[in-house]
Image (cartoon, rainbow, N blue to C red; front, side):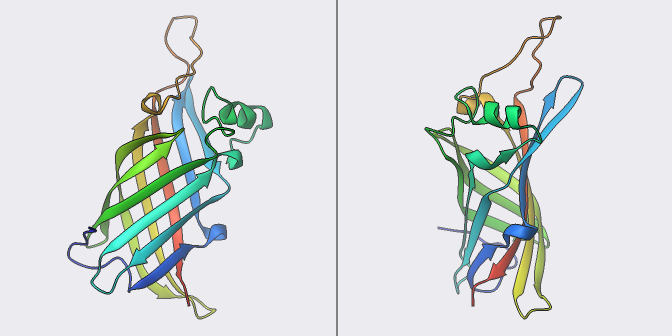
Length: 182
């Protein structure tokens, strides 16, 4: 059963992401900075019932990972990381979405490399607006942090000092524009 508190996220209906104006990305500590990437092929659906019950489902195709280097893209798709051949998608599903003002909390489950774990996303919602083409849109920005090793993404490269080159905590951010189905 889904939960919506104080106000609804959007009017009743089915809302799908606009792929041009939506992004799913990640970042992880690496060496002396941060390693960032995106999934070019990601989508989500927001279903809002008349009673306000809301579900959110999303996925990202692993083969669409982009870190601006083809060799690194291939390494991330290998069994060392996401194992695109055996696990072609990352998935997310939530039925517990709570909105207070414009602050959003989502309790759901994320599936990475075949492992399902609970995750809490927090973020904001932009209330419905009508675009110049007569569509109704809702914006949502959410983020969460997961430990990549909880999902079997254990590869690392030790530094000369003995520490790891790659951190375990991965920040995931989704900036989504949903368009209401006609």
